Image 1 (cartoon, rainbow, N blue to C red):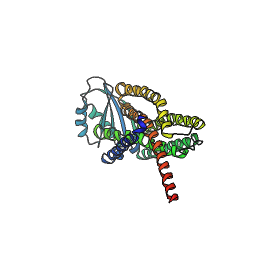
Image 2 (image 1 turned 30 degrees about the vertical axis):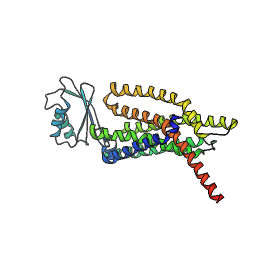
Image 3 (image 1 turned 60 degrees about the horizontal axis):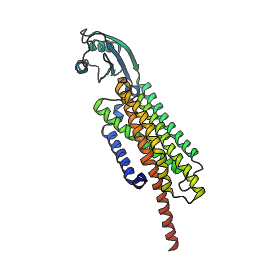
Image 4 (image 1 turned 90 degrees about the vertical axis):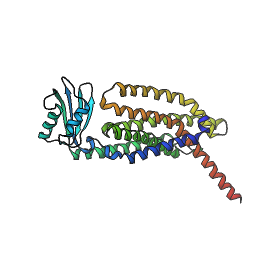
Length: 312
């Protein structure tokens, strides 16, 4: 019952984190951090066969190559991924020459991909559409799964609460990613979209487990005695939170392993998923269930107020 008794504290923490995340999105302008997947450009991957130049040396050389804004990311111990504007054949040759510093370093071009602006815009539209469709599918599923719940909180209110927790679970990791994008040049690419969709799925799963326990306890208690909603929610949390935390910790350990020992290209993806799992577990325990109790208390208060008006 500790969580339910202190529900306003936990809800306030969530609101504060979401507000900070939204502020970071506006301050650091996440829309300016779109990768070449969405804006168009060229992606070049090279590996050095001998001595490897430092990233700072390459930054200095490429800065004078007249190739526009270039982002360099190390990959492994001997290679780099270079993201740039769409390059002509001459500019591509100039880039490779700059990377080898005029032949000082021997390198092998492992891949070169060019994405046009129109393709990038199409990918952006499809990514946004996919996120909207997945969110709608989740809402429809929640409404169907809890259609038989009517007292004391109706099924559609369960759905609204799930939507609010999903916004919470996505907003905070995106806010963290925006900060990383500003200070460490992380980019919003297709892996970012995959991370958002994965967070949506994992978070709603965790919340449904606890909501389902609340539904079962409400059904059993309704048969035996009068329902005390806050106590039922508190009891359901006590029965579920150990399982939720254990499951999330298992996934987080795997994601942290991917972050520390995996390839550079998936590092921010793993970090964002880790944040999503952490705050998704937090919201299912400390936000979604307390919100249910708060809604029920508002209903009772509104009903009592209405009764007093009738008596007068």
